[in-house]
Image (cartoon, rainbow, N blue to C red; front, side, top):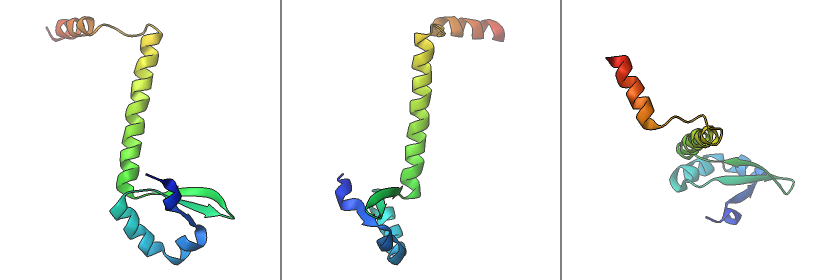
Amino acid sequence: MKYSTQIKPISYLKANAAEIVRQLAEQREPLVITQNGEAKMVIQDVASYEETQETMALLKILALGNRQIEEGKAVPAAAVIKRLREKKA
């Protein structure tokens, strides 16, 4: 996706809000809003935002797991399963 086609000034947002909402929902591509020639915000549809947040959460969990492995805080799966089975019995 080329963001250069998705850059609009804030005046365009003000004048075309309803159309922008429709386009964002259809195209599911973010829109960069500029003010005084500088990028100031990115807007996107809610479904895309939720997907991004879920992806970020999964990446954070993965990074935490990798950090725990590097720090030697990981326990082999077999040991965990054994411990759970012993608790259950």
